[in-house]
Length: 350
Image (cartoon, rainbow, N blue to C red; front, side):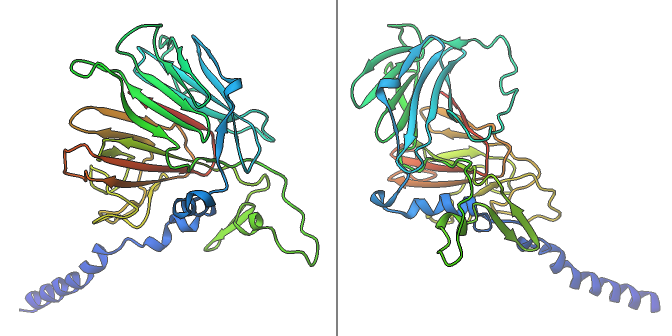
């Protein structure tokens, strides 16, 4: 009888402990977007009206050069006045595009992954300037006059880059599958000297925004070279399903993070963490961080990959008649990618 009573007491104690185990994940121990100044700055621009967005990027048509190795053009923003070089490269059989945006003369060099393409036999696809006017240039990924190849259209002001997948079968015309900077959220922060504040003067807004130092709990992060974050929006027209961004304990079909039924209140965080007893159905980061996304519809699929190991957040939102589960193909899925540092080196898999 004594043994039975002891067993019952032990079982009762275990039952009392179980709820605590089930809710052991403490979200306050992990950063959210609002805890990072770079993420706050980029995400706040989404809600600004177009006329209030101070950072508008434009490309200079006179600087456009297209050769068999790729296309390049000079880009500059209305606010930063720091020249950037945009390069567009065709890969393999013309079904993939690599887009690189980097500073022409940086104050300090940024980290660039040295070994992104390991297959030395992966030859670049030839590129051809199909047309150009004062507003845009159309570039085909293939030899002149070839059918069934991908296309890239660069709109000069404001800067937008449209990607078209090769046509095939009943759809011989190239189809638009992705648009970079459709919502004007591109921002390429640059290293700079910290402004000096004399006694009695107001503190500049950029100093107050955490560009030089910030604290989280007991940790203090100083940035003697200033900000270096990169953010851009990438839209997928006629796609309502997107997958990828491992690793998260979330649904395979990525939920929206800005509006919509069942949407998360936080963007997906890409940051390697060893989380014990993690929570389910959240955008918190887990053991791996792979900035790859696949958009899928009944018509086709398209992929996006950004080889950047810095802390990153990705927002997902949808608009239009189509919604997840609806195969009408009338919706647009918008994504907003924000990294603390690095450069923009984007692969679009057509």
